[in-house]
Image (cartoon, rainbow, N blue to C red; front, side, top):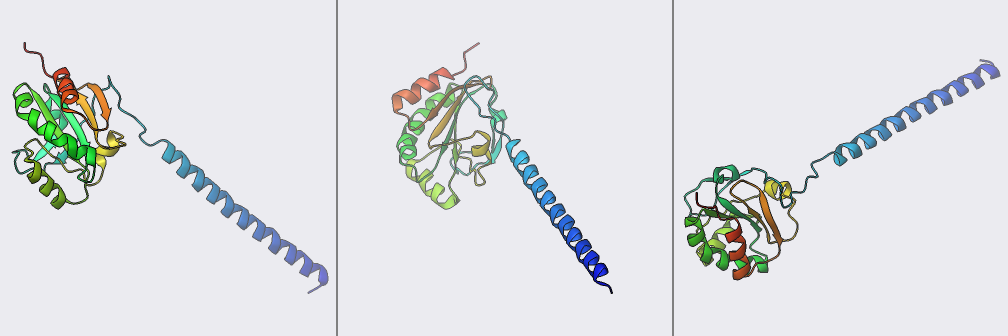
Length: 192
Protein backbone atom coordinates (compact mmCIF):
# COMPACT_ATOMS: atom_id res chain seq x y z
CA UNK A 1 0.00 0.00 0.00
CA UNK A 2 1.37 3.30 -1.06
CA UNK A 3 1.66 6.31 1.19
CA UNK A 4 -1.01 8.11 -0.81
CA UNK A 5 -3.42 5.27 -0.51
CA UNK A 6 -2.90 5.13 3.27
CA UNK A 7 -3.53 8.89 3.56
CA UNK A 8 -6.73 8.59 1.50
CA UNK A 9 -7.99 5.69 3.65
CA UNK A 10 -7.20 7.65 6.82
CA UNK A 11 -9.00 10.70 5.39
CA UNK A 12 -12.05 8.56 4.44
CA UNK A 13 -12.10 7.04 7.92
CA UNK A 14 -12.06 10.52 9.56
CA UNK A 15 -14.83 11.74 7.25
CA UNK A 16 -17.00 8.67 8.03
CA UNK A 17 -16.41 9.13 11.78
CA UNK A 18 -17.36 12.83 11.47
CA UNK A 19 -20.57 11.96 9.58
CA UNK A 20 -21.47 9.30 12.16
CA UNK A 21 -20.87 11.62 15.14
CA UNK A 22 -22.77 14.47 13.49
CA UNK A 23 -25.73 12.15 12.80
CA UNK A 24 -25.79 11.06 16.47
CA UNK A 25 -25.71 14.70 17.65
CA UNK A 26 -28.54 15.65 15.28
CA UNK A 27 -30.66 12.73 16.55
CA UNK A 28 -30.01 13.68 20.19
CA UNK A 29 -30.86 17.33 19.52
CA UNK A 30 -34.08 16.25 17.79
CA UNK A 31 -35.04 14.04 20.75
CA UNK A 32 -34.42 16.88 23.22
CA UNK A 33 -36.49 19.33 21.16
CA UNK A 34 -39.31 16.77 20.87
CA UNK A 35 -39.31 16.19 24.65
CA UNK A 36 -39.39 19.93 25.38
CA UNK A 37 -42.23 20.60 22.95
CA UNK A 38 -44.23 17.64 24.29
CA UNK A 39 -43.91 18.88 27.88
CA UNK A 40 -44.91 22.42 26.92
CA UNK A 41 -48.06 21.14 25.27
CA UNK A 42 -49.30 19.40 28.46
CA UNK A 43 -52.56 20.45 30.09
CA UNK A 44 -51.85 23.84 31.65
CA UNK A 45 -55.49 24.77 32.15
CA UNK A 46 -56.07 26.51 35.46
CA UNK A 47 -59.70 26.57 36.52
CA UNK A 48 -60.90 29.93 37.80
CA UNK A 49 -64.10 31.57 38.93
CA UNK A 50 -66.64 31.39 36.09
CA UNK A 51 -65.22 28.17 34.58
CA UNK A 52 -67.10 24.90 34.51
CA UNK A 53 -65.66 22.57 37.15
CA UNK A 54 -64.08 19.51 35.50
CA UNK A 55 -65.61 16.15 36.31
CA UNK A 56 -63.70 13.43 38.14
CA UNK A 57 -64.27 10.09 39.85
CA UNK A 58 -62.54 8.81 42.99
CA UNK A 59 -63.12 6.04 45.52
CA UNK A 60 -64.77 7.21 48.72
CA UNK A 61 -63.19 6.03 51.99
CA UNK A 62 -65.48 7.46 54.68
CA UNK A 63 -67.38 4.57 56.29
CA UNK A 64 -69.95 7.04 57.68
CA UNK A 65 -71.07 7.89 54.13
CA UNK A 66 -72.89 5.45 51.84
CA UNK A 67 -71.20 6.43 48.56
CA UNK A 68 -68.63 4.01 47.17
CA UNK A 69 -67.34 6.36 44.52
CA UNK A 70 -67.59 10.12 44.18
CA UNK A 71 -68.16 11.60 40.75
CA UNK A 72 -68.67 15.37 40.59
CA UNK A 73 -71.25 15.04 37.81
CA UNK A 74 -73.44 12.96 40.17
CA UNK A 75 -74.07 16.15 42.15
CA UNK A 76 -75.46 18.13 39.22
CA UNK A 77 -78.17 20.48 40.49
CA UNK A 78 -76.52 20.75 43.92
CA UNK A 79 -74.01 23.25 45.20
CA UNK A 80 -70.66 21.57 45.90
CA UNK A 81 -67.88 22.54 48.25
CA UNK A 82 -64.83 20.72 46.82
CA UNK A 83 -62.12 20.78 49.48
CA UNK A 84 -58.54 19.46 49.07
CA UNK A 85 -56.79 18.56 52.32
CA UNK A 86 -54.29 16.36 54.14
CA UNK A 87 -54.11 15.06 57.71
CA UNK A 88 -50.69 16.70 58.19
CA UNK A 89 -52.12 20.16 57.34
CA UNK A 90 -52.97 22.17 60.51
CA UNK A 91 -55.35 24.67 58.77
CA UNK A 92 -57.12 21.66 57.19
CA UNK A 93 -57.58 20.10 60.62
CA UNK A 94 -58.89 23.39 62.05
CA UNK A 95 -61.61 23.80 59.41
CA UNK A 96 -62.86 20.17 59.45
CA UNK A 97 -65.08 20.62 62.56
CA UNK A 98 -66.70 23.68 60.89
CA UNK A 99 -67.37 21.66 57.75
CA UNK A 100 -68.92 18.84 59.79
CA UNK A 101 -71.00 21.26 61.89
CA UNK A 102 -72.57 22.84 58.77
CA UNK A 103 -72.85 19.67 56.66
CA UNK A 104 -76.20 18.23 57.89
CA UNK A 105 -78.00 21.58 57.56
CA UNK A 106 -76.61 22.44 54.14
CA UNK A 107 -76.97 18.91 52.78
CA UNK A 108 -80.72 19.28 53.39
CA UNK A 109 -80.57 22.60 51.50
CA UNK A 110 -78.97 20.95 48.44
CA UNK A 111 -75.27 21.58 49.13
CA UNK A 112 -72.74 18.74 49.23
CA UNK A 113 -69.31 18.84 50.85
CA UNK A 114 -66.65 16.69 49.18
CA UNK A 115 -63.31 16.61 51.01
CA UNK A 116 -60.66 15.13 48.68
CA UNK A 117 -57.88 13.68 50.79
CA UNK A 118 -54.30 13.73 49.48
CA UNK A 119 -52.61 11.48 52.08
CA UNK A 120 -50.57 8.50 50.95
CA UNK A 121 -52.26 5.89 53.14
CA UNK A 122 -55.86 5.27 54.07
CA UNK A 123 -55.05 4.30 57.66
CA UNK A 124 -54.19 7.85 58.84
CA UNK A 125 -57.26 9.23 57.03
CA UNK A 126 -59.54 6.69 58.73
CA UNK A 127 -58.19 7.73 62.14
CA UNK A 128 -58.76 11.41 61.26
CA UNK A 129 -62.35 10.72 60.08
CA UNK A 130 -63.08 8.87 63.32
CA UNK A 131 -61.53 11.61 65.45
CA UNK A 132 -63.81 14.30 63.97
CA UNK A 133 -66.85 12.06 63.20
CA UNK A 134 -66.88 13.26 59.59
CA UNK A 135 -70.02 12.19 57.70
CA UNK A 136 -69.51 13.91 54.32
CA UNK A 137 -67.83 12.08 51.41
CA UNK A 138 -64.03 11.80 51.70
CA UNK A 139 -62.62 10.52 48.39
CA UNK A 140 -58.96 9.49 48.37
CA UNK A 141 -56.77 10.96 45.60
CA UNK A 142 -53.78 8.63 46.02
CA UNK A 143 -52.24 9.45 42.63
CA UNK A 144 -52.91 13.23 42.72
CA UNK A 145 -55.09 12.92 39.59
CA UNK A 146 -57.76 15.35 40.77
CA UNK A 147 -55.22 17.57 42.53
CA UNK A 148 -53.36 17.92 39.21
CA UNK A 149 -56.60 18.38 37.27
CA UNK A 150 -57.58 21.33 39.48
CA UNK A 151 -53.96 22.59 39.76
CA UNK A 152 -54.21 22.67 43.55
CA UNK A 153 -51.29 24.38 45.26
CA UNK A 154 -51.33 25.09 48.99
CA UNK A 155 -53.60 23.16 51.33
CA UNK A 156 -56.35 23.50 52.17
CA UNK A 157 -57.75 24.67 48.84
CA UNK A 158 -61.48 24.86 48.28
CA UNK A 159 -63.59 25.27 45.15
CA UNK A 160 -67.18 26.38 45.65
CA UNK A 161 -69.25 25.13 42.71
CA UNK A 162 -72.77 26.29 41.80
CA UNK A 163 -75.66 23.87 41.09
CA UNK A 164 -75.00 24.54 37.38
CA UNK A 165 -71.40 23.27 37.73
CA UNK A 166 -69.70 26.68 37.58
CA UNK A 167 -66.85 27.59 39.92
CA UNK A 168 -68.15 30.47 42.05
CA UNK A 169 -65.18 30.92 44.38
CA UNK A 170 -61.69 29.49 44.93
CA UNK A 171 -60.18 29.82 48.39
CA UNK A 172 -56.60 28.89 49.31
CA UNK A 173 -56.09 28.49 53.04
CA UNK A 174 -58.29 27.66 56.00
CA UNK A 175 -61.81 28.98 56.47
CA UNK A 176 -63.52 30.27 59.60
CA UNK A 177 -67.02 29.07 60.42
CA UNK A 178 -68.54 32.39 59.30
CA UNK A 179 -66.68 32.54 55.97
CA UNK A 180 -67.46 28.90 55.26
CA UNK A 181 -71.17 29.41 55.89
CA UNK A 182 -71.17 32.51 53.69
CA UNK A 183 -69.73 30.54 50.76
CA UNK A 184 -72.15 27.64 51.32
CA UNK A 185 -75.07 30.12 51.15
CA UNK A 186 -73.69 31.39 47.81
CA UNK A 187 -73.84 27.95 46.20
CA UNK A 188 -77.15 26.87 47.70
CA UNK A 189 -79.68 25.99 44.96
CA UNK A 190 -82.56 28.41 44.63
CA UNK A 191 -85.96 26.92 45.25
CA UNK A 192 -88.15 26.76 42.17
